[in-house]
Length: 252
Image: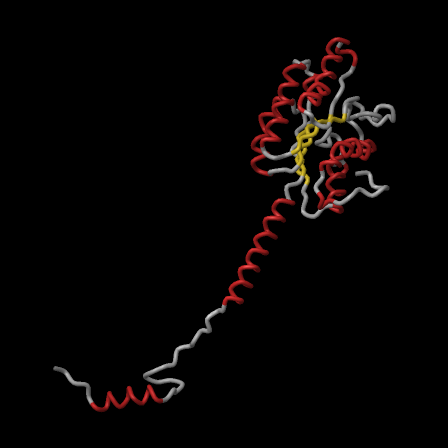
């Protein structure tokens, strides 16, 4: 049987008795075990961090605006449009509460309905402002079909845990009394059936002030603060607590 040499045995014994900084044997670091109090403290810190992240995520859902050229700031600078003004206001009042403007010039309720689900999936908004229907009327489309599209957009919004609001529209009287009346009635009917906040005529007061572009359809830059106030009438009660209360002099 093989035997260890006396020199090797002497070397091992020497290492066990002393702790030189380097050499054939090296002392390994020793870790202090965490006691129960340390573990509880670390767990509490971890839970607080997770809750903070969840809270911030929940508060950052924001407002989705689904509209047509009126909300897309047609004919004026986008930064002067009512949606941009709303965004600036909420930036001051709310913490991490974005405004997403998904408005498209020429959009109908059918087009908005087809785009909405993807927008909900992408942005998970807290509130959905639906400003559509004007192009349905100008194109002479069925008011009843418009109402169905509006209803479906409301249902999709609620299914995504968002609160929808409606901004109603009217059309010129030259479309005929019967059609214009039926068109206007749909917004109120949908609002009543679905229990959704409605501002009946989004352009209320704009024509009287002469704040229309030369085409007679789109509002001017001067009208945008008024449009923001109209939207805020139905928006304000739905804003989360993080936005605080509106000050007396604020538009929103």
